[in-house]
Length: 518
Picture 1 (tube, one colour):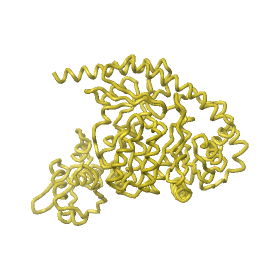
Picture 2 (cartoon, one colour):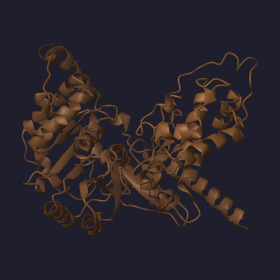
Picture 3 (cartoon, helix red, strand yellow):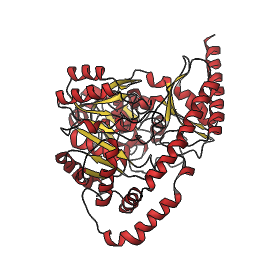
Picture 4 (tube, one colour):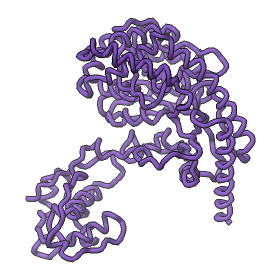
């Protein structure tokens, strides 16, 4: 009997017989099922795998049609051509080398052994290799590396190595380096949050914090409410936990609490994820009235709120509102912060502030995953906080980014053709653009990339960017009508030049589309 490691993904849009055919094809192409080997009857295979017999029959027939299997009436089904399986799997012609069938090379067939989570595809472009530095880099998650406080960084890391590390090299505090947690608690007073060092858990960046929360709170099949558009990294984490993703619209005042209220009435939502200080990716600030409404909804329905305060350091114009956590006497808001935006993305250091019963569970989950973030970085960042060097850097870089924000908005107004609309963010480091009719975000991104202009397609920020296993696979197409532009890593001059070239590409694409219609 064929010992086949096959687990159908019953949430996938790919029919089950095609999933089975893909698995068998990979085994044949890799040489793990050698030519001439007899396969079990479809009835027996279906019984072994606990699937319908028709599923097994259709999978066999598909492979027979390709030449990867051979069926002989009265004798059974046998493995056919390895080359045919390789051609079908690659979608292109593959030349069979002499002796290939006789002495097959047998790479391990990892694709047939992946878990349901392992088979889930990433958002578009997430794992694509870097294409080298772009001429104009409008991708999000960037900082201006030239504005970093290099002297302060050098002093902090040098002191961490020479003075502090020898005394704490064996530190194993389950919540993280205690002086850093104390410095974080002191710093959060400016966000209106009153907490102690023992209310803070240090993590390997905000992304790990989100993953820990999902692991501790969310079971497969439970609903998590996320902003639409919203941060793709959060959607990815919750979907990986098996959650049903419930999208909640945003507008110029942030998360629409009226839409959330309807969702809470219609289903049990386990967790609400929001970015109130600078909504990702629109930059909208959650209004005071909606903050109050969100907290009342959360209290009335006993729903935890996960507040991602990733970009709260960067406000332009108005004074920042306090954090949601500042309105949380009951302890149902889980607050996540990061140092990646204040310093640089490669510094994987963040933190969670939560009620202590939950914080202990999060700490245990973090220990299982990594035993804790890099100690040397924790020591150095604690030094930057205690010395005031980080706050001095932020005061300067806020002015720096305010100039770049204004330069981008001026360039958009000057160069983009009719039909584009964009946000006027008062927080964060990016601008959200709606494309005119007839222009597709992915097409624009590809054309721009080919000319050295890096932009982010809006598809990654909507649920339709996660089809094929993420969330419920819902797709409304809105993501294809938007792009996101960051102004952090380009000068005012290069922002203007890059937008002008992007506008030229957009005009060509629209003209091409009009010619096709005629």
